Image (cartoon, rainbow, N blue to C red; front, side):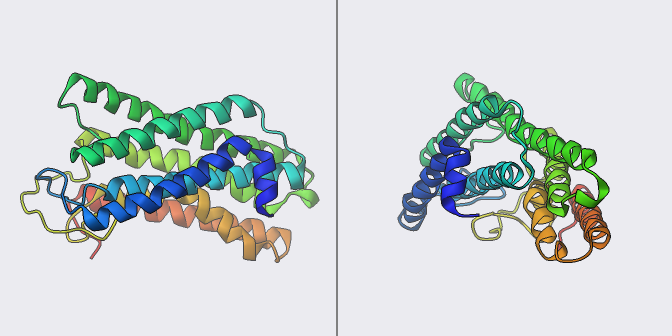
Length: 270
């Protein structure tokens, strides 16, 4: 599947992806010349780290959605119900999330869980709503894929269609599961952290103590992991391919839950 196919399927999201990638270049450059950090948070990072991370991660999220819709339409003739509403909702949500996170980063203040002012309280609430739109869109696409896969005759069931369905629905479940804990604790740690050791580059993750963001990342990216697993498995017989995809989805979910439990216990992955 080439870029022209992706552009033809959903032009608005395709060009939004390119815009996000274009934004990432100056954001990365600013991170090299501007050495400010975000307040005195225990997971202190460069003020441009989060904007860059979200520009890249949301671009990948949208690319995966556009690819899935294009694949379903091309290989299975599936026209996603509510396609226009989904595209408009995603475009508005992404524009707000990325602009708000970037502006807050440039100001040197947190974007997530920041209710220091009335305006920032509104921004935090809108971001939470935007996250629901992002995961909800994945759930809808995954549900349509699973329903279409189920309605096909057993001999015609495409392994990739099952992988899209499972991966996208799991993204909704696991991202919600891990994201709710981040919201509950208003940050990545369940314990009070007084030391400000540096985390991993770009992500800012702490591996020496429990960090909820690691499990959240793992859960969010099930929408890429399960379909990627389906590429080599699709060469096998249908039974083996479907079994392998199901096993991979279960294993990915189990790893997410394990990482989550480590973080909730305050234990690091290393």
